[in-house]
Length: 496
Image (cartoon, rainbow, N blue to C red; front, side, top):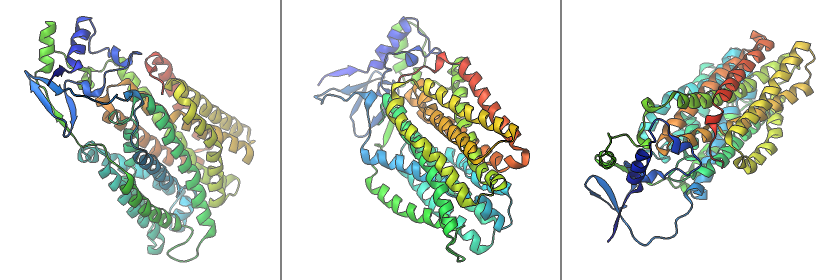
């Protein structure tokens, strides 16, 4: 039996002797592929791989192995990948299916348009509160979070549906809060699509594009089906135009959850093995004080520039969902006031805008991996910004009509959906594999912040004045543009 020292130690010594310091993270941002996560001094070992330790340095048995796949192009089983992408689409659909009839549902039970905006945005608040406890409970895996999402989605939609029969307005809010626990799944689908154990670094942008395609499906099919069910009506106290979106979503989720649990294969359970002396040993070889391995860095090791990259990507992510959420909540209210639209017509308007973006988002699945993420982000932001400026010009000239407003909505929906494809994939490429949980949480909390504030702003957009409403969004995009320009060189990352 032969043994080999993990390359982490040798890499560490070479890096130290060549004068690289831990604060620059130069290796992580260079064009040279970074060392695999399994090469860490502190290693994740999948049971039941035998590991031996000698003098504090991990030793692993070498044997005859099949040719290894390119780790940068790694993908999981198709059934499992389909489950995560489809779960994201289901959650997006559930989030938006109530948008078209939310204002009318709240009004018939005594609520206001602002209350309807609150019911659209409030799930993300409670989703954010639930994320930290759930990440401590998930063991780094995905089956438990999926079960939590499915069960919460079923119960939340049932509560939302029974509000009409109970004649209790706050059942709508309670149902959406319970559904908010299900929306923790947004973070897990992102984390899965950047998990270095199953996903290669050059697959992340493409998978992020698939997630955004599911997002486009959600805000297209959700309002359309919700508006269609409202129009059909089903005039009885239990199943009618207001309650049917909840019943339909809950019923479909039951069947989808059963199917998912049959085809989904979770990542192997891991145990962490610590080699307490490996870093000190490497430092002694180099004749220098011990310095932590990049995989073990905490927030205290970040430089000002690295903090800038994190803030820039989080702001961009928040901006995308802030603007998309505000428009989706505002369109039913604004079109009802200006064009006398019913919830059905407003749902169709939102859906048609979303459908118009789908060909472009499908193209991004194919072509976006060929470009740097920062280019895609800038392109999407410029397109969305153009839609906002055009809307402000039309409002200022008092010449807004259905056709021109639709063009504005398509530009906004396309631009900020396209921009949202790469915020998380770009950030995940900037930091070590061990930071995947931290970066996914940072981006998801940014998404939540954007969704809840955007939905509330959209509900109040007509009351505060549409010009002020659009001007505020332009200001938010402008701040993001300044951050992009300031850290443009640091946003360079691998394509794919």
